[in-house]
Length: 104
Image (cartoon, rainbow, N blue to C red; front, side, top):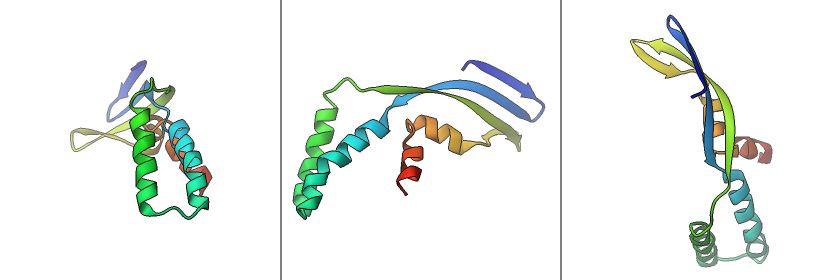
């Protein structure tokens, strides 16, 4: 948490969120599947390749992203609620939600 400002029932938090770079790893995963998809792989081959990729990933030192986010909150019925959840989720998931939107 870098900064907090509270004004009545609204607050603004400037935070830095560190998260695994999911965009990088899921892009690598999809690229690794391309030859199997093009050869009409079966479900068993897909499961095997998926398991292999993610098992190997657990043995690596992962890359992380750091994203500064301004979290806007509002007090509703005595509880603080995040207003801009999409911005926060984008930071938590290492930009994956932006990548998914670009893919569509």
